[in-house]
Every structure is written in structure tokens, then in C-alpha cells.
Length: 148
Length: 62
Image (cartoon, rainbow over the protein chains, first blue to last red):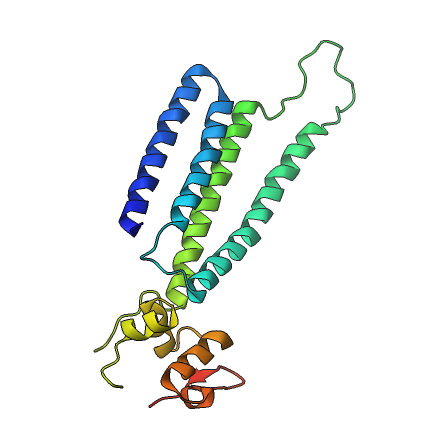
């Protein structure tokens, strides 16, 4: 398979996932997009293995490896910071005097807020990876040109 | 050398042309495996193509 065909397939899968995402929002069935996402990603990996006119050599592997390591190094710190904050809210200990029974429980992170935070973390991860990938690609000569 | 292009060399040893360019520009230090492949392609010893520098390993010029 040619590289351009792969990008065409990738675009079609992304478009299909977008349609399924809105469809699952409409129907309130999160499982639909979750399963579709897994199937989509597996399909992309399988299609990528069929590409014949592109070689992934040791320099490409090194760039990917370095970018992934750096992304994880930054991401886990941010992720843990958010998680610790969330745990603190879950372990909320009421201060004295105790609130009377039946009063409003302490404000916890609601599912909607958690969704936004996860979306933010996902975006952060993508931006970090792309940034580090560009940095290491430049470091290992991806943007070098011939002088001849 | 013998009108050899970066593309030809890259294809012969199974890497991208950009990798050959990066090695030439000393932006990327190849693995031992790749260094041996390159030197074997030219039929010379590895020391004739690459110089080991303890601080920054570099590539032999010329």
C-alpha cells in the first residue's frame, strides 16, 4: 500500500469516528464511541503495517522513543497533580461544627468537570508529544537540507 | 564516490535518505549495526568511515 493511500484511510477512519462520536452523544451511549475508537486505532495500526513505500529506520524509532519518554515524564507529573487534587476532594473531611444531617454534601468534582479535565489532559498529552517530536526530529537532522 | 547518491546508499542499507543526510551532517550518530552496514557497503573497515571520539563520536571526513 502507498503512503498516500494510508493517509486517505486514516482520514476516513477519523471522519467515521467523528460521526460515531456525535451519534453516541445524541443517543447517550458512551460505549459506542469507546468501542469504535478501539476498532479505529487497531485499524490504523494494521493499515500502517501494510505501507510499503515508507521505511521506519532506527533514527525514526529514536525520535519516537525520545518524544514518548519526554511526554510521559512531563505528563505524569501533571496527571498526578490533578489526581492528588481529586483524591483530596474525595477524602474531604468535614470541619467542625459538623454539618447537620441531610445538608448538602461537599462539592466533589462532578462527572462533567472530570470529563473536561480529562479532555484537557488528553489535549496536553497530544500537544506535548507533537512538540517533543518536532524538537527531536530537528535535533536528529530531520529538517537538514543538502548544500549541493 | 562512483556517482553514488544518498538515495542509493539509503536504499542499499535499508534506511531513509534523511538518515544518511543526518549522519553526514553529524546530527545523528548511527548504531553499531548501521555503522557496520555502511562500512561493509563501501568495503572498508569501520574506522575508515567513523572516528570514535570519547566526548562526541564523529564521522571521518574524506
